[in-house]
Image (cartoon, rainbow, N blue to C red; front, side, top):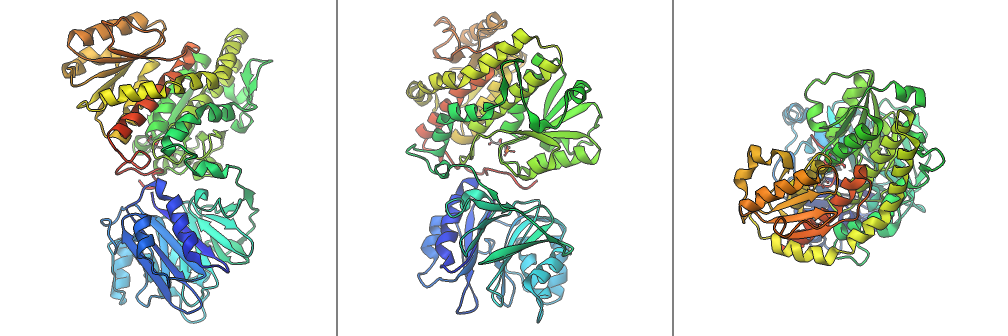
Length: 608
Ligand code: F6R
């Protein structure tokens, strides 16, 4: 979704702004813009509907300034257009603003500002900020005061960066629900909504808290609250590798991230397995064994793939710890006035840690006195900070819009949680050891699946032209089917349905035809015979079957098969999912799709 960058220092800001915006492209956007203020006075502005490359082409050589702000916009209020792109100016063209988030009382503010003489040039909620800050930036008022006063009138969420032609020695930024990171350089400062934009320039960063503002100058920064109290923030060091932000020789980030999974799973497991007691150490949960024993239910909240990973997590917790567990879309949960129970543990799942629906669900649970843990990839993100404890995935930055390595690491994190809870309850040491060894074997087993990438590409080319695809699985296999269908539809745009295999004959069997092939998850477990019967039913209706299995079914039951190494039954879903990532990737490539930035989607959905 929308991205913010800003620079102040001795150099020309424009090259950083354009490169930083290009680094944020992965988040999804439809227009981009930059504004600079410099020694010659006034604000220079360029903004276009389209890509950052279009913006770069529209920026003339004389577009120079040592202080600047930039933005990639994902349309919410008003269509994608040059006029609606950020930055937005006030009428005197003194103040320029970029904004992520939503101003809820924009209509009311717009009416008031218009009555006072402001002329609006866009349909955006953001433009009210430019006019509002300008209205407070009267003679002798510091920019930070004008911004603070203006934000006092605003209801909504924001991450903003503000430039003032009359005070070009500073940028003022603020955060409320939408991330802002300061990057500390040598006599220069950077700002971004996401560290990936600035990690090439500095590893020293400060993540603003909600309700915090900062005045950023070339030689440092000052942070303060909305009621003007100074805050003291210590910089932290970004430990993600710089090459995580490059495709590293792969054709797409998605393929790179799929292939990174042996390493990312190792990092999620890193130092957390305890062989002696056959359990997992998860100090960040902030719950001791006695508190854990009092938990009667687990409710997992996440959106999209995070929700499906939560479904796998719920099964792991139920099977290993025998605690009833259930996953629910966070986006639905928060709108249904949920009952929050004292003996239920809530777990929020998010790769980005910024998904608005998940954050709002966490806040709803906390407001009602519930306890929430986070399973989050991005360190210091809003959801991580809002939770009472949790686990970081350490999967490394995920750039491609479709989640793969974070999904897998989330399931691994749930296996650790389930093992930890299980060993506090009734999971035997022998079963604990069984799970510990299976977890340790996962990276090599994932490598075995990845080695089949070329063969899977061949299958993807064969199936990609279908009018749609059915994904089926039973019990543990059902969330795998859901995630497989999700991956295929989001990056290849091929329609995909996921059903429990047991439900097929209650309706969707009517769809089966040679034009609608079925991807069937067929693990070698206690439900194998039932799954094979379902394959027979599909074949009897001329359906084509691609089985993802531990053992090749008879050819009369499956047209094709991808073989996956066997883990313990509880962990099999994690490995069965990997070929489905490759299938979706290769189908998307075969169809010529924009694999890393599929249409209409954004990497982190920071609005409702
Ligand atoms: C699917 C996908 C999305 C995200 C969802 C939640 O591949 O990436 O469905 O899983 O938008 O995002 P996070 O995990 O950042 O909260």
